[in-house]
Image (cartoon, helix red, strand yellow):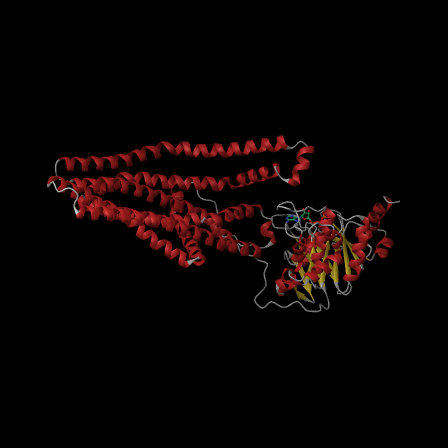
Length: 613
Ligand SMILES: Nc1ncnc2c1ncn2[C@@H]1O[C@H](COP(=O)(O)OP(=O)(O)OP(=O)(O)O)[C@@H](O)[C@H]1O
């Protein structure tokens, strides 16, 4: 898996934080591209509406100025209400109404854009996640990144809304600024000089908070896990019986205390300085205010101009501050975007080559493991060491060995969920890496030991074995019969349409063995050339197991079947058995041969058989 450079945590030095903040702004571009792709019309409508709305405040103030000057003149001339004044008041009303209307429309387009973007980003996230290597999922730091990306894929629309808001605020501020500039450039300069330091300090503070949050992600993930564990159906029984709740509670308290402590430290360090700078900003604003009142009192400004300027100073001050805090927010968000982008930059290494071959139909020579050694990423010890064996067409091969000897790993390698560290896996004499990976997976009917339980209908739980055939009820029912899942489904109140699991309203949970029968039907949904069953009957009772295997024997006829089981009653049906110990294949043969050999297999067999005598 390639590690993108953007994945590094943020720096902690003062300047590196600022530099990083500036550099991270480039992250906005891919985000904007995503937003643009998710709904162009909505983006344009949003921007145009905001541009118009941005000019409303300055227009309102300008009209107010004419009104006030008109009133003063009318009072002086004893004219009373003039038609001109009435028109100006009406205009003011129209402007206010347009402002309110635009506000609503902008809100509508925001919601629309948020939904469209969330949909687009979530789909991209799902697509990308599905392409990643299995190994990626087994890397704990990946979870942190995935979690951050998952939250961000949907939350980042806030950034987009902020950018749009920033543009609107900028146009408003500039238009008000021009209004002030026309009266006095110095006035404007004074206000700006007082506000800038606060804004810069806030920007730096934001970067520090981001650095902190980045560091805290693993802790937050553990907190989430503890919270979930403390209230989950799966763990409820054990938590009660083992009295684990105080232990979890203590761990939660401890971790969340550490988290809080770090947050408080960063805030405490910064809050004094930030407050002082805010006071400086207020000083600039009131200084300008006092100057304008002073000028008006001296008769240098008309009352209308006084009204305009005080209004403009108040409004400009507010929008300028808002603009800055929005800008800080955008810079913050752009830092967070790194996680989303770094997630999208993860590349799978296990994929089809340029000129990938189709898997032969029928497979003629079968699979060959040639001196395969395999180490899981991050592990020192190899799980498999120089494993060599064949799986030939029409053959039922069983793998046996104690826990953790590498049986499931062999299955994962056979399906190319991982590539060998050394050695080769061949299919019909050609390296597995040469084949089109999706075509290879299509030829595999597999049930893993830790098969997934989908909180969906019973029919869908079977159909996932070949989702293109989801509408083919006859095939689904046929597969259910083959795995004996039909006996389970017939007892469900909703039959094939029964929602399983407890997550959704009306869902029905199944026993471990019942789930297993359902999962087994998935393998039968496919017309696969290879059947792989990894402890397919571990949760089945003895009778069900016998039935399942009698069926399996017939179904696997003419196909290659790889079987993992700890039950010798199952294993002995295989044509050939491989015994795995310490990552090596130590014995090979059929049941009778291995018993005659009197080695490890026969010892394990005797151990199990003796319990039944
Ligand atoms: N993703 C992984 N990352 C690191 N180590 C792993 C991973 N998966 C399995 N292992 C380790 O590899 C070894 C073999 O695991 P494997 O699942 O292949 O054993 P197994 O023979 O199928 O065991 P069992 O009978 O318990 O199912 C174990 O020591 C296990 O801890």
